[in-house]
Amino acid sequence: MTDHSRSFCAAVDWGTSSFRLWLLDDEGTVIASSSSNEGMMHCAGTGFAPVLDAHLAKVGAPAGTPVLICGMAGARQGWLEAPYMEVPASLMALSAQAARVLDAEGDVRILPGLSLNDPQAPNAMRGEETQLLGAVGENGNALVCMPGTHSKWVKIENGTVTHFSSFMTGELFSLLTKHGILQHAIEADRAVSADDAAFLSALERTTAQAHAALSGLFGVRAAQLLGFEARADGAAHLSGLLIGGEISAARGLYGEGLEVTLIASHPVDALYRTALERQGFSVALKDAGEASRAGLFNSAKRIWSQ
Amino acid sequence: MTDHSRSFCAAVDWGTSSFRLWLLDDEGTVIASSSSNEGMMHCAGTGFAPVLDAHLAKVGAPAGTPVLICGMAGARQGWLEAPYMEVPASLMALSAQAARVLDAEGDVRILPGLSLNDPQAPNAMRGEETQLLGAVGENGNALVCMPGTHSKWVKIENGTVTHFSSFMTGELFSLLTKHGILQHAIEADRAVSADDAAFLSALERTTAQAHAALSGLFGVRAAQLLGFEARADGAAHLSGLLIGGEISAARGLYGEGLEVTLIASHPVDALYRTALERQGFSVALKDAGEASRAGLFNSAKRIWSQ
Image 1: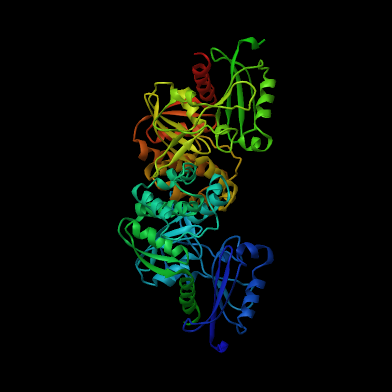
Image 2: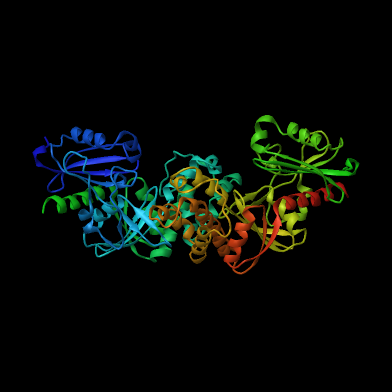
């Protein structure tokens, strides 16, 4: 039996379309957890407090358990805006910038996102900064790749985020497979594996030519029109182009032959590992969910254990 | 009054979503014309012959007027498949490869498309080959840019197409403005002009960095989140990234500082002219509709004037 009297805090990763809560003891061990698809989009209609309260009740959190949240709940259209910290930004300082939700019962705080206020390359993240803290630590040095709907590449020097960039890789895959001409060339729900020939062949082209992702997209269809590939190859071909194109662009931004900390979940972790290695990066893999939890716990300790 | 007794042929550009017919005399002068949105997609349900007959009647074509068609009506899912000519392919030879529609009244033929049967860069076009003949001629030399839903770049040597590539520039613009996160950052029906600051600034970034189209997409949203741009700038910003990215990739494929024959229509012609010139190309503009008509007429003369 779990011992709820040891509860130290509830850690919440509240994204655009997902909610994930862990009840943690003061060593960061998980006492209980709960998740759902009640993300920011859902809660914009129903309100945020009832969703949080229901999950706290579900995991049996003692009354008064403090709650630390990261992610889109802190966006302008979320529960309470937690203003961005501008890079260069110390990951250790996230906790001090947490926004306190005054209309919540108990102590509920939302960690800020990060912004890159460069008019030539403006950028923003919410949620990933917490994974960075969890995966890289307070004083780490790393180049980080975080695959997703909007993938992030992040440079961290001595615990400080100095630069980051975004790629709409996951969203482009989704748009191109659901709408437009390529939907006829792709089985949208087909799982892609890292050793698919069409995936590897597309990766190879993006490694050789930075522009292959753009100049090769129509080839997903043409390869089938001309009999070089079957419809079953479409998803792997497109994945290879988009993931390879992202990594090729990141090589242009951050350099060649580096070690990359890959913060990802199954099944995309295997595709990115292969793609990164093919383009000359060495890869240290960290699980995205564990990184969120560890980052939230680290920040919670700074807030409530002083 | 037009003199229908001088009718030489009907020239038809039958695309995916559009139909355009010109009744021509034997010098290629337009006697009458008709157009509608009865493209291949529409006719797949209703049949092709009735649509053609209705337009022939509308322009008053004398019985027995021969008809030459280019475009998607010749696709596998069209009226009758006109098999691709494989590049290298002579534009002068298109007419000899036209497929005769046997179930049509009178002499109706469909020009073939072109295919690039390279497993590493497979590609196909239907309709553009006819514009190329019309704009560049039987013995021309040119690097051609044809903006569109699926833009084409084509290398022509002495009237022979030796290479071409495709970019899904128009489709990406449409998908990104109608679905997904950027729809909130873009007024979809906002006209973009070639001197919009957000257009020019995005162009500049794609000129400097080939990967800017991919690494900069999310910046359309971030620029607004961080107050650098307004929603009114979104369409111009995205146009600049996608058009600039296409041209930057084409520079990688075909070389720097060349003259480009731009076959385009209003209003995209002005955007591409500016973007091409900013990346060091010199531009000779040809109207896309006139190019189709001239290419059809050239081929019709070869078929019916021997």
